[in-house]
Every structure is written in C-alpha cells, then in structure tokens.
Amino acid sequence: MEFTREHWTEQDYQQLVAQLRELADPDYLAFNQKLVPDCSNMLGVRMPELRRLSRQIVKGNAEEYLALAGAGSHEEILLHGMVIGALDCDFETLKGYIVGFVPKISNWAVCDSFCSGLKQFGKEQQAAYELVESYALSSGPWAIRFGLISMLSHFLNDLYIDRVLAVSGQITNDHYYVRMGNAWLISMAFVKYRDKTLAFLNDCALDDWTYNKALQKIVESNRVDAQTKEMIKTLKR
Image (tube, rainbow, N blue to C red; front, top):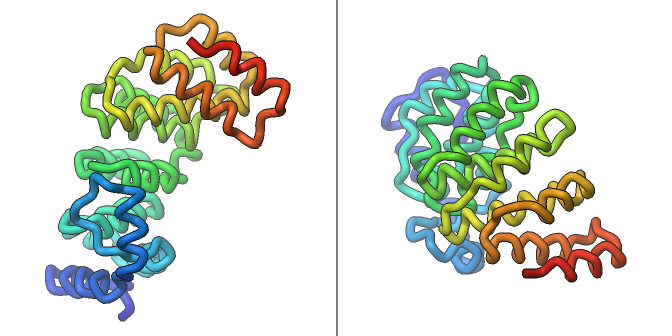
C-alpha cells in the first residue's frame, strides 16, 4: 500500500499501523530484541522498509501525518523520527517537531536513528548546536543522549569541537546509555581531533567508567594506528 497522502485521517494512520504489523519479520524481531533489550513494544520491521515508508510519507502531507503519529510501537516511533529528519522546513518548525519527539525516546536505537537523520542541522548549525547543547546539559537520560549523539553526528567540526568537548566534560548523569554515548562521542572526537581530545583526556573530570570506556573505544577503532593505541592504553585510570 502507498502512503503518500494529500490528507491524513485517523483511518489512514491505522492503515499504516496495520502495514507495519504486516511487515513484521519474526527472525529480525528476535535478532533486534537482543540489541535493544529494554524495548518491549517492538514489531520487527527492518529499517529499509521503514525508510521506504518515510519517503512515501514525506512526498505527501507529512505535517498531517506528524499530527497523528503515535507511540504504539517501536517502529511507529522510529518512523516518526525518520519523517521529521526528512522534512524540508524552516528551523523553528523543525525545532518544534524535535521538542515534541524527544520525550518519545526511550531506547538507544530510536535516539541514535533520530539524531543521525537530522540532516537539516547542516543548514542551521548555530541554532541547531544551541538546541542540542541544551539537551546535553539537561537532566533526563534520553534527552542528554540525544544531545550527545547529535553532537557526534553533526558537530565534530572546527567550529564546534571545543564546545563539544567542554560539554562532554560536564556530563555527570550515571545512566548507562548516557555514559556510553559520551564515551562514543569522545572516541569519535579523538579520531577527528586527536590533539584537542588528548588534551581534554589529560585534564578532564569525567568519572572513571566513562573515561576508561572512551579509551577502550579509541583502542577498538580501526581509524587509530597501533602506536597511538598503545599510548592510549597507558592512560587508563
């Protein structure tokens, strides 16, 4: 069924939900539940199918779809985020959709998919950075991770690297996926900005777990040479 709609009704949305259920793959569900064990509302729809549906929706009246988008399943939330990421709109409109979506994030898969899909951030870097920094320095674990992974996806560049590292060093939330996200951010910063990130690691107030996990991720990277990896190992706390 095609989901490019000039207008969306509740009936249209329920047809979309039914389509998602038809696309569910039991084998993929079993595999994905191991990757996202804290998700209890998963159907098992593969990402290419969700991307196909999001492209169809964006060709039509995506705004009316977004007004109806619910949170009944993991895939509904993923699709909702993909459509936001594909919108062609001004930043204030995009910001409104982001603010409405972030509270729906309850696992790393939705968070990271949403962050990486926000290509519009490249057009409005200053406003977008201010938004994601405010989330990174907030209190809810998934809001914080949204900020950190958005930084990783869109702001590891010459203009923002110093601010990104400064924010990273202020993260104190001990939620597992916050600390993992911060460690991942630091490791990717090291790949792109070795000297700046090394200076940060030598003078940061990160908790030991996040600090050591960042070192581990740097060592595991295939974009870091063997000699550098040996040096990084000596920094372990």
